[in-house]
Length: 254
Image 1 (cartoon, rainbow, N blue to C red):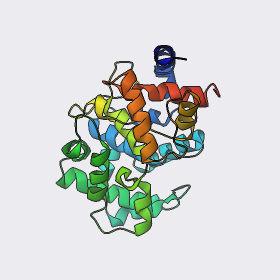
Image 2 (cartoon, one colour):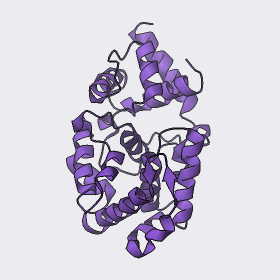
Image 3 (tube, helix red, strand yellow):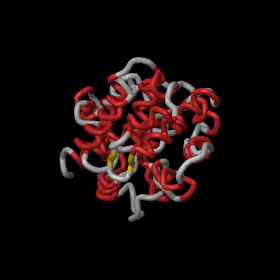
C-alpha cells in the first residue's frame, strides 16, 4: 500500500473498532462504570496500571480493585491510611501486589490533596506536541512519598527509554474525545495532538507489518518513530490509530 492507501485502510479500521462494542472487551470498561470525574480518573489509572497479560484477568482484577474500594474510588482514596491497608490483603495481579496497591492509594491521595489532582500534574509539563516529559514528571510526583523501591516499576518513565504503554493508554482515555463514547475527553488542557500511541506487542507487530515502524524493540525510540508516522496521517488526533493497530492484531490476527 502507498501512503494514501495505508491511511484510508487505517481510517476504515479506526471506524470499525472505535465503537461502544470495544468497551465490552477492554479494560476501559472499568472507568466507564463511574460518572464522577475523580472516580473515572482513579479507576482508569488503576486499571491501566495492571493492563498487561491476559485481558480477562486484567478486567477481573481491576473489578476486584473497585470492589475493595467499595465502588467509590475517590472517596476510598481520600480516606485511605495505613489502618485500612488490611482491606487490600491478598490482592495480586502478576507482580502488582497489596503493598504496591497501598502505596498507589497514598500517592493518589497526596496528588488530590496537595497537587491539584491528576489532570493538573499531567498538564503542568505537557506541550502542544508531547506528553512524554509530563509522564516522567508525574512519576517524580507520584513517588515523592516514602515507598518500597519495587513499586516504582509499575509507573514507566519515557525519559528512561520506556514506551510507557499503560500510562499512554490512560492518557488516551482521559484526553481523547471524538464523541464515539469510548474515550472520555475529560481533560481539556491537553491536546489529543500531544498524545502518544500505547505501543505494545500487538500494535508494534502490526505497525511493522504495515511498514510504519522499523525498530525491533518496543521502547521510547520505537514510540517516537511510530508517533511520527501516525502524525503524518492525522496530526490532530494521531492516537486514534491505536484502535486500528490493536484491532488488527488482537481481533483479526493480521
